[in-house]
Length: 407
Ligand code: UTP
Image (tube, rainbow, N blue to C red; front, side, top):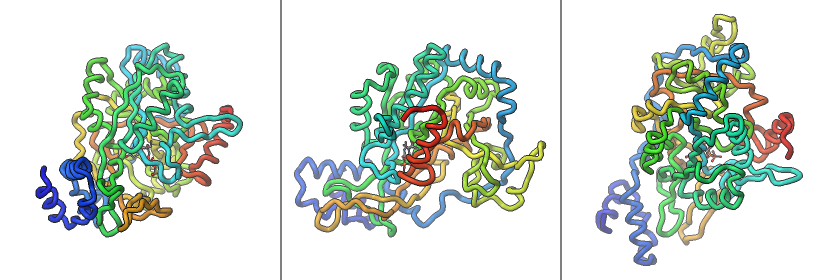
């Protein structure tokens, strides 16, 4: 794309202001901005006045495998899981491309130190949990780590500096997720530098297409990886590739297993697993009608009772059928750093615009079957989203201590 074409592309969508500082730029910077314009899909900007989806389908309950069944079948599930892992059929994928804006640190979230008497980094906790399974199964599980262009260098350098917290370097593969443009509440693009339009990672559903673009689906094929456990960076208690979960998902013969926690109350504000038009899906708390909230399953328990915790075990052979363009685009209010009229970088304290994301939970709906697998909230769910309050460093510390983790 040349300068005239870039200019036309931007003026056609009313965003010519991205050239405001063009005359001040060096030749290399000019080329870089033109290249960014050529590579970026700006069609997302048209979505700021639309909802995420095109209306919802017909909801029905989806039974979860509950703790009572898991405990009764523990040996059987565990043995199948261990066998699957030992055969090298299971990989793990850490979603670490997010910006962690609510936590408010400039570093990648995984670098956050949650220790009290000694450093305990979020990455360290996550890797330590995976190492438990490595030791138990005597198998170095392939670990993929998704970063973004915003945090890749810091993440990779930090993990290397800490010797990957004991993980084998040759079993880790990094890749970067794709980016989407970010704009103010009126749809006007922000600039993050004089030669760069503001961008944000395009959401955690980007993992599969970004992985394929990096050519890493070949590793899945070459190594015969049949299952991949996708998990968030910020739940410091979660078990990753734990044998019972793997075994239960394999035995159920489903497309995906999803770790879920029992709702604390019928009106708790969490999305819950269900069927939508016969396919697995997640119904948001504000979409639950009174009738659904009061519906009971065969044991007399609430029929819509299990919230997802962003830990899914996908059957890899079904991923090729998941299409990005069939997933809703979520328009999210975020704090977006930008340069002002004078070129000074501003880091807003409050959300100042929209970014565009596709979410991993929307991948579920494109698959034919799902096993919701119950885990105990106090033992496996300690997300760190905020510095204090709900889902925070403070609440996670309390839960870690209750689970015997020294901080
Ligand atoms: P969150 O939804 O909590 O988003 O991500 P975030 O960007 O980390 O944090 P906030 O909202 O700005 O405070 C849940 C998980 O998905 C990953 C995150 O790294 C985290 O593990 N994620 C999120 C990505 O990998 N890419 C994205 O584009 C968004």
